[in-house]
Image 1: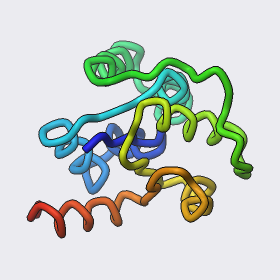
Image 2: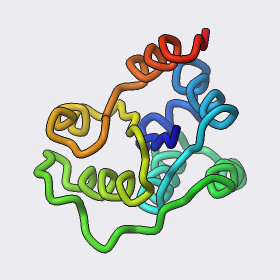
Image 3: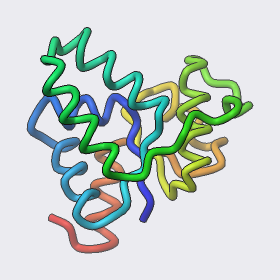
Image 4: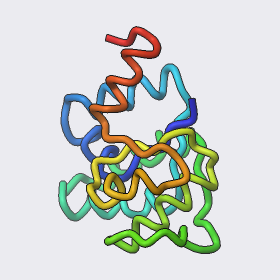
Length: 137
């Protein structure tokens, strides 16, 4: 499965032990992680400004992501109205990367899930889906 993780899921995965870290590890081992330049730029800023991580740590995390599929910034944002206009770029990137699912903790993305052209699900819902479909514990 091609899985696109939103920035906040990646921040949680890198900042804490828990569900998002477990999801990231499982996706790296069993699925195809898709990310994009849009997310990497936002992630770099969040890790630097909010978490105050050193540049060397941020570089190592970015290197890990760049070993996966990285989608260039799309030519335009997805036209679906979303409260946070930046999320239109995230959605466009996930679609350009042919993701099967977009995992997001962002309420703006989750709110438009019923109208989105791909499945958008929160981390717990995705974990439960994986457990149901493949016996992940």
